Length: 442
Ligand SMILES: *Cc1c(COP(=O)(O)O)cnc(C)c1O
Image (cartoon, rainbow, N blue to C red; front, side, top):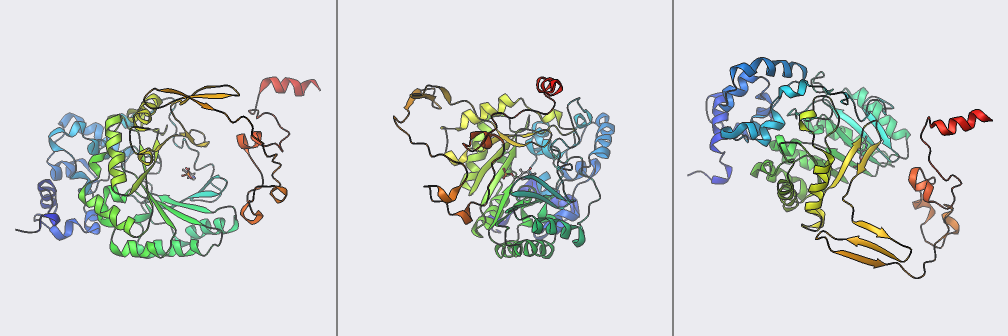
């Protein structure tokens, strides 16, 4: 008997057999083999998985993939439950649905305005101290719920060094950028030496404190997490990695092994899931997913409300579903198994956290709160509190923030309204007609 641990499931073997006519145990776990045998058309999908779609659906499916192409690794396809594929969370994330062609009034091609908030190609600079840097146009699997659906199927290429250097130069010239988030596409679709070069360039910039990588490879192509890749990454610490598991079924033995390699290399792991109708819009599925992630040293980071990108309407849930899920997690399970639920604001406002209300009421004396069980409790405010006047002059402050640590001098937004030093008492939206009338008067 061969070692059970290295054996493939029967279904994986069937797919592997269908791909190449024999059981290539070694090849199946070779990520280049997986990429070479990616499933990109309906006929191949049917031939390899044995799932046969009704003939009358073919035309619509072809139309869908001509707009939003399909690409599935044999590994990920092998996780589909063939007997009940219509309701299968893997199938729904990977296989086209003609509903993607329904564009609703509120859908946008780039709802997060990533292209507009882009000072140079590939960089989105939305927040003061960090940038999103798209370094790869390639993905090993095209998620049907991709928020960058507008780009899926763009020429599948690796950006040139000149193009990447433009982004790196931007980061070098902007000293406030202390956190660089590599995404794409999938940065792990770059060859090791190319990614090594990008990381080396970034590491040479003194103000870049951390580098983060966003990759779905641990979910859809875990064999890409090779020892060589991990050893290369280790040279560029501090590296953080966020991945994208949406359903507990995705945490297979191979995926867990990939996570272990990354965690053992000292890379803190996070997970960003997307709330998807028919896939994970269930408090029990979400609890299981987040607990399994923690068990594998992955900290649930964000739970995203599905974006308003074109072609995603069939995946969207009401925000109420997300609040219900968070309600079912807070207090009920490990604190760090609870992701922050966020809406990425249409128009480029960034991520907005959403929580159930735990603060019920307050006076100057007491705050009334409720816990996860519904118990209502009070917190007595302190009888005396000496507020420290803050004019953002840290030199004369009793609190001991050394000035070289206080790199940010000005406050913006709501933070600014809260400072003592600020003369403005309100933030007024552009085009407020009441204030326009005032201006017209004088
Ligand atoms: C999500 C995102 C970031 C990172 O945000 P964090 O809340 O720090 O994880 C940075 N830039 C852009 C454009 C983003 O969308």
